[in-house]
Image (tube, rainbow, N blue to C red; front, side):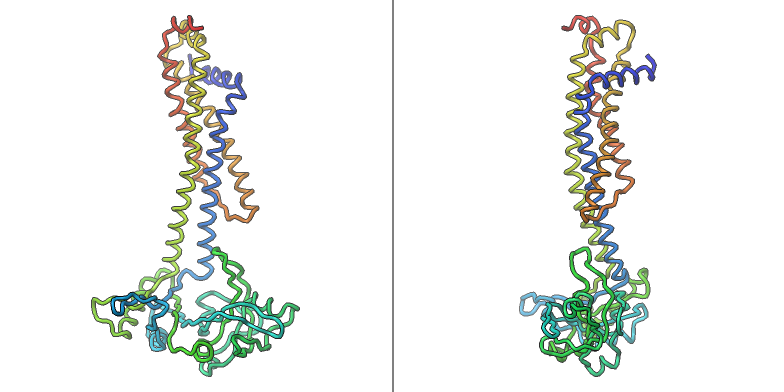
Length: 405
């Protein structure tokens, strides 16, 4: 029996039991759809995170105090006072691989204008901060170096703060707001950035000269962190090495001693988040793939039932010249056809499910390889779980099969 006739016979057998064939496909449809949707959500979330981090600049380098041991007790890094003005000035004046640098101090509290108030955070920065974080001033202007030298009570506010304190649409520029009883003149309003992938409102902030925040609000002489921007993303490692050398020298750290600061790059954060999302995606896909395993077992069960029901048919085919390999191929073709058809329908359902998830606000992106892998897995399932019933049919004794009632 030629291969074309085998396909025709197999498809005719499937068509004669449409409902049972559909039930066999159902497990494959659900499994493939679940795998594609999980992959799409995982890939979409990963791309969303990378995009949000990239918007902040992929060449950003963050320097923070490191944990230290005092009397056998490890101190909280946030309590350390290791980053000083000397470090900032050395980095600004000596580095070759850093283009922008800004010390940072921060405080949270109520911002007030008239009868309106909002809970926000004020960040003490230098004028380089906008270039490092890729922020832009939409209205007004950024405070100046002269404001930093004078510890001027001037600020730039985010769009959320502007909307909360000036709900009537009043232009905030030139107005005086209060933060912890300290008056600040609004010099400008930042262009909106919206929420990031972590659900944080990037527009709910106030920027002020770091000297002002340190002296008038926090009364401290050290920085919470120092933010830098490498010349290029490719030179980030060289910039980190250069920064490490400057800080170790300033802090008089001996060779072999641990750093009392930590340096992290945005690329490192991006790689960490991507690795985390990859792990989560794998877990989700493995969970969804179990339904494919169950579907394969279902196909094998249905094919075994089909072999039993068609025992006399198998005997008749063998008696008129059909070989064992022909019978085996016929049932394998039926199994593969059911599996692949279910896979194609599952891909369609998965695509529609991804669109629904996207319409609900979830970040989604269907990688082409996931469709190819799903199709390949369906073929493997069809062959793998259809082989045992097919071999059982091929090994039947023709005479016994014809006598079967």
